[in-house]
Length: 229
Image (tube, rainbow, N blue to C red; front, side, top):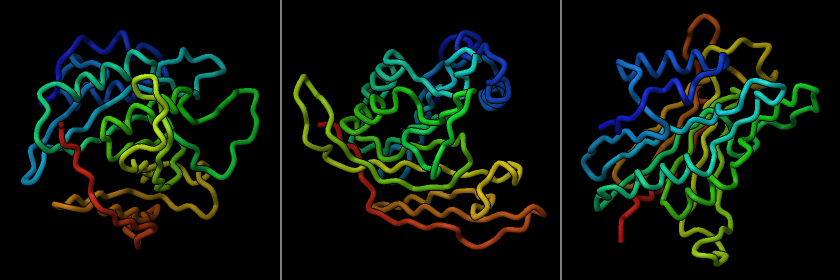
């Protein structure tokens, strides 16, 4: 079930988001959606909840490559997670910009094209206690898998670490032009396979002629299901 809301024009009114806006309009069948929104899918062993966030919120000045979510959007998402919680949920967040750096270096530029979301730390601080298992993003087209945990504030107190790790997947790109990629990085696409108790992430190579290649990266780990207390 997709949670409905106002038309997207208020959130996506800038030229650099037009293709994403068109994709969402096609996906939803109309312009009647909001950010954040949560898509749910009932699986055999748990309820899958996928939350969509809009990180393209800055006006396209020289800072247009920065991602930004806002405290209000992050709080709204947590409220959506809290509505009618099930006994077992697998929670995933999806956004465009990075939550932590994955490329080896980002050279200084007058255009200030830094890929990490400005309030990424706030998102992670919120995702950990909310039981989010995955954060998926794109932007720099660089395939990478990160396992993250950190101290965060909850009810005014500093928590040593979250009760579980969150996995961040930078999915690469199947179609971005080769000059945009590092020499050692191929075009890729990602597959996440979910079972009752584990997740398998496969990042696979794809070539310019569309030929499917071998696995570029693999990871298997226990699946953490959020259970409302």
